[in-house]
Amino acid sequence: MSIQKRLVGSYVVVIFLTVLILEIFLIASVRFYYLHNVERILINQAELSASFFQQYFAEEDLESQSERLLKGFVYNSDAQVQIITASGQLLQDSNGYERSMGSISMVEYPDVQVAMTGTPGVWRGKDPLTHEPVLAVSYPLKKYEADVTLGEVRFATSLTTTLHTVKQITLILILVGLLVLAIVTLLGMLLSWTITRSIKDLKQAADRMTEGDFDIRVRKRYQDELGSLADTLNMMAARILKTEQLKNDFISSISHELRTPLTSIKGWVITLKANGKDNQLLMEEGLDIIESESERLTHLVDELLDFSKLDNGRITLQLSPVHLQALLQQMGKQLGPRADRQGLALEIQVDEQIPPIQADVNRLKQVLINLLDNSFKHTDPGGLILVSAHMKQGQALIRVKDTGSGIAEDKLAHVLHQFYKADQHAAGSGLGLAISDRIIRLHRGELRISSTVGEGTTVDIILPVENQRNLTIS
Ligand SMILES: Nc1ncnc2c1ncn2[C@@H]1O[C@H](COP(=O)(O)OP(=O)(O)OP(=O)(O)O)[C@@H](O)[C@H]1O
Ligand SMILES: [Mg+2]
Image 1 (cartoon, helix red, strand yellow):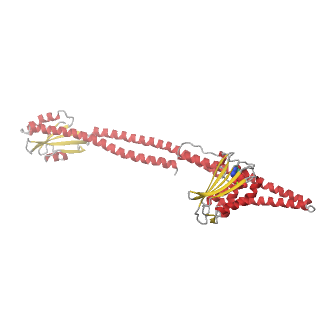
Image 2 (spheres, rainbow, N blue to C red; image 1 turned 135 degrees about the horizontal axis):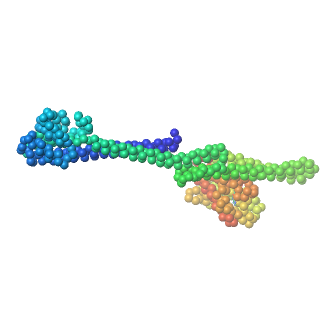
Image 3 (cartoon, rainbow, N blue to C red; image 1 turned 90 degrees about the vertical axis):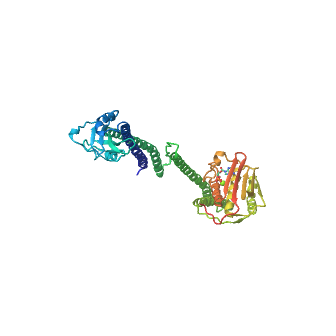
């Protein structure tokens, strides 16, 4: 069942039940109100007549004064008025009745039966003669201050018009109810249409994306949950496109990276084939270059493999206590010659209080080499590269700070992404920081970069001192 049907269905069911309950209550109230009104009028008149009788006529004979009484009772009443003897025989009838036609017994009527026992009786039912619905009220006519019933006065009225009015009101109420239901159904359809329309848009776009078309964008119709879902989907498509773009850039840059050493290797191989046999010096120079170019290629391929392993979570850390003091001093020694070559100052400052941390020493080295390599690449001669380590809020903080070119603010957000290079034509695969970030996160730590163009770059590695064994990327 579609969402639209379900939505409209639930609206209609709720409103239908509400209207139904309200209508039943209203119709019952109207019916009760009208019938009760008629009954009250009749009871009032009967009561008035009975008390009138009690005050002025109770001492005289009922039969002989019945005609006069009837005239008095009929006054001010539209109802049929009857006067009945104590034994239930009809004496007078405002609708006309001659004694000579024979006596009529009223004992059959329930209201008369009750009145004969001395209490007022009310009866609603069908008139046996006319088959009309009637309401009748019988009141005992009593002697003053004595509980003797001398006869009864009976007020009866046809309910045909009243019931007709009630029926008409009922009809109007039902029509209004149906109208409300129709309006709600229409509104519900409209409302659910606005919802399902957005959902259909989303589904269509998602379908297109499944087919690989990431240029499509979902139209955002409203500022609601579906609107934000549309935003999310659009963002996702944009990111996929961006990743695709990065991948393409990467493939072209990696081809370039691969081609340069390969060209050089091939060139030297040709040269050596032709002239190498006789020229020992040339041979040595060529083989040296071939060796270093092969190393460059191996490094590149290693980095790629590493990255894909880290990305798939197939790497497990070999944790052991690492003494940062020793590690950083060792790195300083290792990279000192490169700093000298580039005319850079490389300084190491480690707080002696720092405890050994649980880490994978080789991976940590790899990260530091990546960071230092970046600093070396982007700092001009005369600059300073400072590596420091100290405790901060119970965690170890290793900082690599250079006085290099810095990274522009709009690019800073992307440098941790795989294959991202601020300068497309610069050497490197753009994987160094992405790999470093993953390794540090694997250690349950954090890599933070801040930079100012022209002033330099600071990279902070924050590592927990205690670490569980054998961490894998989740
Ligand atoms: N210390 C730094 N100073 C200036 N720019 C930097 C610095 N470190 C990184 N960057 C910028 O960030 C980009 C990404 O660095 P990353 O180490 O990930 O890749 P790479 O150095 O280009 O390639 P790789 O490290 O794989 O050889 C660099 O291309 C560079 O533009
Ligand atoms: Mg790098």
